[in-house]
Length: 333
Image (cartoon, rainbow, N blue to C red; front, side):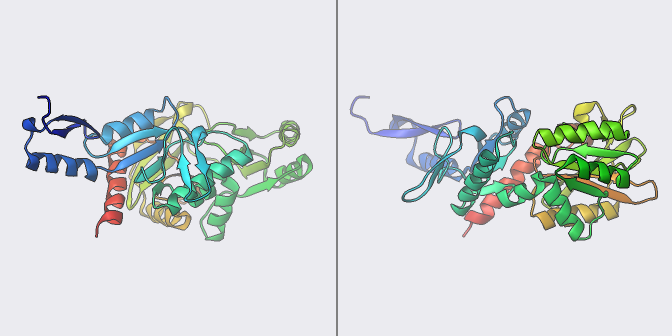
């Protein structure tokens, strides 16, 4: 009615729109507004077509507001309190940010993105995973070096900058090595080199492209590896099997089945995530054929589509529960 006092009604748990106070009592209004205020707001750094963002938004329905943030839109305004934004302001507006993608970029772009995430951390935003931990895990050389120094069993690895040094290393690690990019996942850019002439051409090409040459001694395996997903203190195991390739990435056609995690692997998986300070991680283990295991690498932005299906576990729901629980611990008196 004209002149009637205006109130607010909650629409989908996030937007508040004015309507007549005659339609809602003040007690109900107070409860509704408290519910809106209590819902955490979570940003997800993800690609526009990300299946994982869609899965997280589904899992968060009624629990938290989840919004996508574009990595390339990150920016910062300094001069007074720093304001970090993408399409809209992030500073002071989000309780947590989940990193679900790490798009390619120049060294400057990657460094700035990590710095911006560190800035959000300083402002009290929970970042999953922490930027310093992301820097460690994304860099295969840096993470493997730290893990080997901590006593974890990893394949013999050589990292160099010139094709001449790489050829010499192939003679020592061969006859078969696996060449990988230092940055990257899902089996992209990985090549097995068994022939010295092929190695010579590959190493020369990498040097000409300005790439670091990262190679590991090939570990013969029975056609499968073990992916362990760790989230906080929880973990799930998945066997990835490939009948016709030495690569066992699901994105490359490997099949996934649930797998009981051996106690010694579970112990290593938890210790590794603590060493690298990761809240969520995917760890790849390879059997050595003698009852032991090699730790191949650690993924700080692990996918869970195949694992969720294989293990019949809603990883997105578990992650939302973990993040909202961490937020609640921060905000409780």
